[in-house]
Image (cartoon, rainbow, N blue to C red; front, side, top):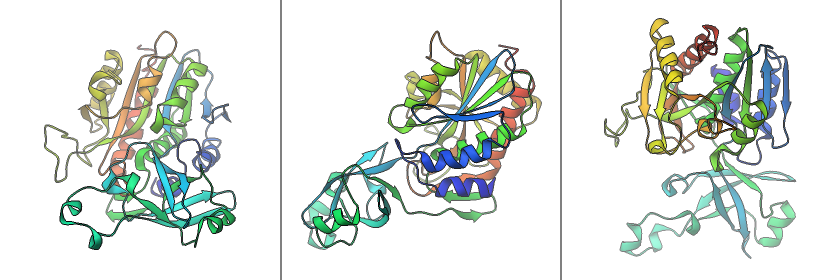
Length: 346
C-alpha cells in the first residue's frame, strides 16, 4: 500500500489531464479485473465478475492544480486555479509546468514583503497577484521553450513518511481513494459484478462520475475519497471530530445536504459490517465539500449510494497527511461489505 500510494501521489494528473494516474491504475487493475477500458471522457472503467446486480466503486484520479493563463513580456507566467485553493497554500511553492516539449520547473512568487507598506503585509496575497518564475528571460524565450497558454501546472512535491504509518504527500485527495480501489479489486470475491471506476474532473464539477454512472447504471454505489480530519490545531471538535488512526469515515451527509445524503440502508449496512467485523469506523456529517457520490446517486432514476472516506489533514494542499492504517481499514470495510452480500440486501 505504501509503495502504491507513493507512485500515485507522485504522478501528475490534474482535471482534464489524468493520463499519468490512469496509466498506473490500468496497469494495476488489469491484474485483478476481467476488463479495464477508458471511456470517451477519460474515465477508467474496470470490471470484475459477471453477476446479475452491479456495484460501482468510484475514486477520482484528478488532483487540484493550475493552468497557464498569460505570459507577460518578461516571461513571467500568470495562472488560474483548477479546483479549490486557499491562497496561502500557493505562495512560494515549487511547481512543474507540463508542456508539449517537456516539463519545466517554476516557482510561485509575488511582490516582496520588503517593498510592501505595513497595511499590505497584513493582507493575504491572492493568486491573481502571484506569478510563476520559470527562469526564462522574456515571453519569446518562454514560448520557444514550449510554454503556452493552457499548459497544466502541478506541485513539485514528493511522498514522505512522517512517523510509523503516518505519511505525507501531494494529491492524497484522491490518490488515497485510487490506491484503496486497486486493493479492493485485488481482494474482493463476490457473486455479482463490481465496477472500479477512476473518474476524471471530480475537482471541477464531478464530471466523470456523471457520465460513467450513466453508462454503468449500477444497482448500488460507493465513492471512495478523503475527508477533513479534525485532530490538529485550529479545528474545534464540533467542526470535525475525525481522527487519523480512528478508522474510515462513513459519510452520512456532506455539503450540508446539498451533496450526498447517504441512502439509509447503505448507511446501516456499512455500519453493520464494521461492527460485526470489528473494523474501527467514524461517522461524518460535513458542511463543506462533496464527493463523486453526489453525482452518482442522481443518475437515471437514482442509485442507492454511500461514501467511505479516509480522514486526512491539510486537504487541498501539497502536504496532505494521512494514516496507512486508515486506508487499509477502508479497504477491509468495503471488501467485507461487498462479500457479505450488501447488494443482495438492498
